[in-house]
Amino acid sequence: MNYPKIFVSAILLTVLASSCKQHEDARRPISISSGTFMKKSVERNKKLVATEEQQIKAVIKNNPKIKYIASTKGYWYAYENQNTTDTITPKKGDVAFFDYEIKDLKGNIIYSEAELRPQTYFVDKQEIMMGLRDGIKLMHKNETVTFLFPSHMAYGYHGDEKRIGINQPLICTVTLHNFVPETAYRKQMETKAPRTETPKPTPPPIKKDSLNQ
Image (tube, rainbow, N blue to C red; front, side, top):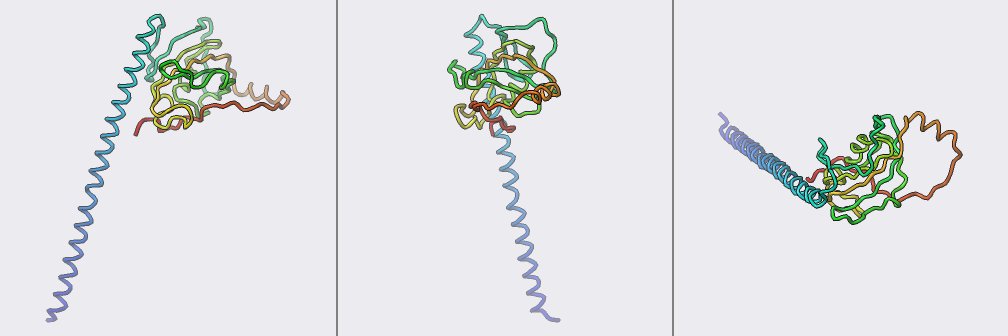
């Protein structure tokens, strides 16, 4: 019997088995670390949301004459001018025409209405601030509504990389002038002569992963 060959083979098998075991053991901390990271991330998000809710509730408390309504989506809104006659609101397939301004929770203007007007929005077909995307669909023609958006309904942890900071709650005052079916809007645009306009500065589209990571 060739004992040297058997001995060498046994050593190789032992080394391979040890190597595999070390490789398997090395993977475990990554999984544990990943789970820990996710748990901490969720906890940070919960604390952030709770903190911002307290800040927004302080704004509401300091303005007792304004009747704010809590939405089911986690933001608050109040009517400055309410249209109680119309019953129809914008929906997907409509084009909405509105003006708005953006303030911080202290009331400081970040983007004025003059800077941002006019806004033409293809409902649910364009990427805009998540809060506006939902809030506009609550409005009737010729209404003005003030929204209090926590950061996850605004620009999240990215901000807009210009004037809106990371994790910044916002006050948005919106006036919805009109909305029409997209087909009617396109026909109207086809009949109009082309015109040149100076582009208005407007915040970039909100990114989908808006929650703090």
